[in-house]
Amino acid sequence: MGLPEEFIDAETVAVIHDKIEGLCYYAGFGRLDALLGDPALARDRAYLARLREYLNDDSVSPVVIRRLVQRNPCGADAVFRTLLRKPALTSEQDGEALLRRRKKRHYEHHPLPGIAPVGTRLAELLRAGRPSTS
Image 1 (tube, rainbow, N blue to C red):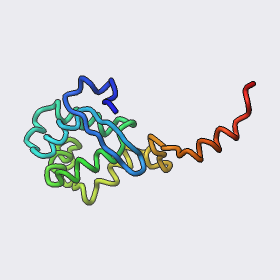
Image 2: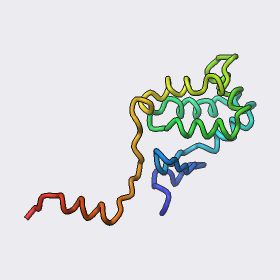
Image 3: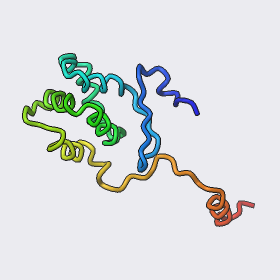
């Protein structure tokens, strides 16, 4: 399996597998991982802009934000405080509420997997249930 074409030229790509959402690709993840690992990078507006894009983009799952925070919990607090201009923010206390506000679509209904494998028997049943086209 190759990388989807739209990610070929990306500087970095995260490949994340989630039991609910399936296999997902995220361009620019490395830049965000570096930012949360070194909050001093928040002085560079390009890093903060990328994080803002992840937060505001409905196609970006809350799962990827949680993974970033899990990898760098101390740095995440400092970076999100800078980005959101909330000096008392902590990911532990405020993180889930932030995701629920910014990623409403993902919480409105239970997300379906991006890929659903179909076994041989289920495929046979699905084909048998289809009206014939002849």
